[in-house]
Length: 182
Picture 1: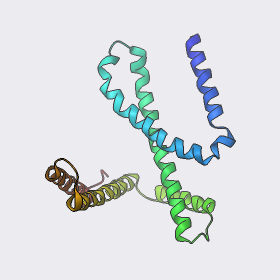
Picture 2: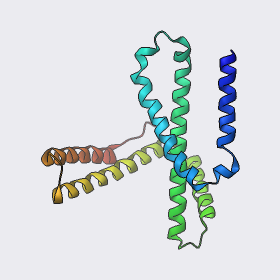
Picture 3: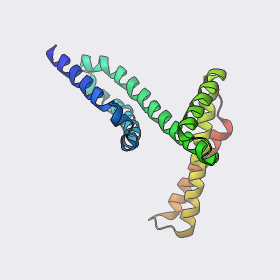
Picture 4: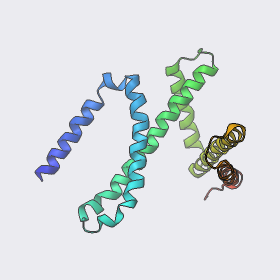
């Protein structure tokens, strides 16, 4: 019981220190936390299933693990949302040739996101986002193929090209044939 209290108090103190206004406004803090939250979230999602065999004798861990996985998944998505908002706000400000300030462009991106989420079917949004990611990585495979055909310094260039072609085809299939559940 005392260990849990100490752990909770330590977590609350750490959270209070980490969310101080001066630290939250720091660009270094934002640049550090955004990818770090994604890495930690992804780490929990990857490591926990790999260690599932060790959970058998630990009932408390088995009871807490699903909550930890949910928190990790939510934090990973939150990290992606923050990064996308920052990127979208920056792009909006750049495309307006700085006529719209960065702060207002963030507000516009968030408002547009709220309108889209509340007016559309969430499953359609997920399918659209999945297609967009698949298309982006499809383009990355094409860039990789172009780089590998020009001056490929890899050990097995034909194998890498075949791999990139296969991945590009799979991603293209996702772009073309992804369907929603609804």
